[in-house]
Length: 235
Ligand SMILES: [Zn+2]
Picture 1 (cartoon, rainbow, N blue to C red):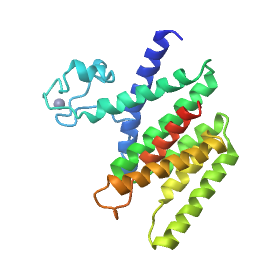
Picture 2: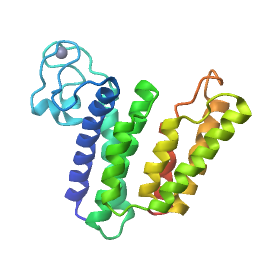
Picture 3: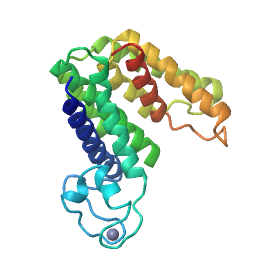
C-alpha cells in the first residue's frame, strides 16, 4: 500500500480523535459542540486553521498557546496520536482495502475513543452518543445477533453483580455499550473481547487501583479489549 495512504489515514484519525474529544467533553454537560470553535482554554483566543492541524501544530508551537504562551495539556496531542495510530491498524491488518470494511472499522474505533473519553471525564457513557454510533453502525453491515448477545451477557453480569455484592458492579452504560459493540463484531470476536476486557479490568483492580472499592471506569477496558481482539483475530 502506498505510504501516503498511511499518512492520510493517520491525519484523518488524529483529526477525528480531536473532534471526538470536543464531543466527549461537551455532550455529557449539554454544551453545544457543533458551534464551539476550538479556542485556547486560558486566553480564549480562537485557534487559526494552522493551529488546528493535529499533533504537528502542538510540536510547532512547542506545546504553548501562540497568544498567551500558556502550556497546552499533553492530553490533546496524545489523544490525536492514539486516533491516528488506530486509524492505521485496519490498513496493516487487511491485505486488500475494502471501502465498506474500512469505514466500518474507523466508525467502530471512533465509538471506542468517544466512550473511553466520556467515561474518563465524567464516569458515564451518554445514551445520545451510543444512539448515534448505533444508528451509524446499523447502516453498515450490522450483526444483530452479536449485539443482542452482548446486551444479554452484560445484563446478566449486572444483575449477578448486584445480587452477589449488593451494589452496582456493571453500569447500565456498559450494558448498552456492549449492545452497540455487538453491532460491529461477530459473536466470536464479541466473546473474546469481553474476556480480554474483564481480564484487564480485574488486573487493574487487583494490582493498580489504589482504592479497590472505587467503581472502575470500564469503558477504557472495553475499548482496549475490543482493539486487542481485532488485532488478534485480524479483524
Ligand atoms: Zn492562550
